[in-house]
Length: 210
Figure: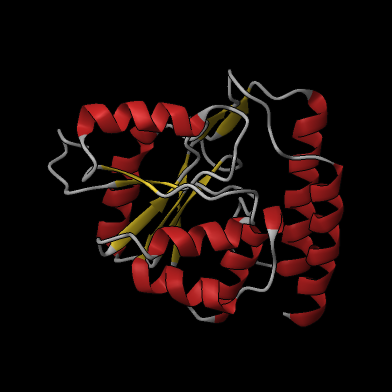
């Protein structure tokens, strides 16, 4: 990002993740400074939507890029997001694993099946005009992000889907950049049976109300 010439800050929201994200972020803060690495940890797992809200409160720029801090979302794609946004003044640029040369590496068959199944059901039921609803690597205009969040009622992993559904309802423009998602090497995912059940319930709710 420094080479690109863009002014930036990295806001880290950690909800007690088991992969040591916060410890690494603290080390990076010592290297790059508190003005670049902004740490805003929370006491426990309070939900993805509230994490976004927490982060927005501390974001000083006009655009917000959201990605996983474990580098499953590689920062090398960020310049492509910015270039595409500038080319069409898009409200949202979303990373997609399921279009172009995008893909997933490091997942077992079960995880791939869950992701593909969730994405397929979401496409059929919600018609979002986007190829990857369950991913979270996205660039938003800050006011657009605030508007979408204020419209959402979901929690957990289905929150990502609702963000794009609400964006469609508000007639925000969406573009996509193919990305390569690489599963984390260290730590464990917080996706479990509870999250899957919650996803199914909220998907049906969105289908009934949008």
